[in-house]
Image (cartoon, rainbow over all chains, first blue to last red; front, side, top):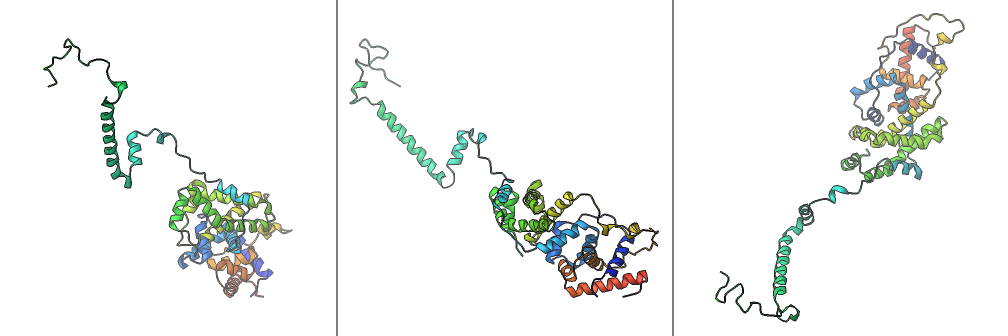
Length: 166
Length: 180
């Protein structure tokens, strides 16, 4: 039996005389999508169709979605640019990072595979420092550093000859 | 079923810009198509760009609430986005529409020259099944043909015709009208 005007009037009368359904929960987009994809369980489908009849917006959304499902179109560049601007780029790290302690800097810099080398490098630097200091203390061959007179005063000065450090 | 990988969804929900840009690249054509087609049908294609932006605002608004509600086990992401896009377009059209009422929505008794008090016949809630009532809504209030109604409901056209026939039989019996 095809659609006809008499049936249309009959349904309109039935709709007018039907008691108004109490407004229920708004139909969820996820439920609409499940109904469209045919993944809604049979037990839930009947109740969902009942809610669709009572929610004109949801029914319009269902009809429109079925008509546009599977279609896609190229998006104009200005539309994409506007959408991209909705999520901000991450801020560059400043402030707290710059005031980190030296210990924290060492901890961050020498981590992972570099950690064993820290001790070796530190020892090497220490040894070099010691050697360099020792060399700087010597006066041979450095005329500019040689004292002009005897280091000990002739009258004995502060130390007697037979005294020394303990 | 087109899925969104869990790690991709996680990156998106954490607000990473690259993840958002990637999401736009992959899914905005579906959203744009849905909005443009719906608005063009209503003669408001010029509003397309703004309504598409409104869709994206909804998607990433309130800490991506709509996307957090997406369940890949229940439906495809493209279907979910199509629903949201059409819902946004329809909301836009309703806001833009001047407050008026279709003649079809006005009871006939009100339009009659000599309005008479209609005989109050109570229609039981269970006279028609929800599926039969939905078929009648789609065919007569939304003015779809049986093939279109079948597509909306995910059934074949013959099932729609069968439910249509059964619904009319029940209604006629209830109103005690003569059949065609």
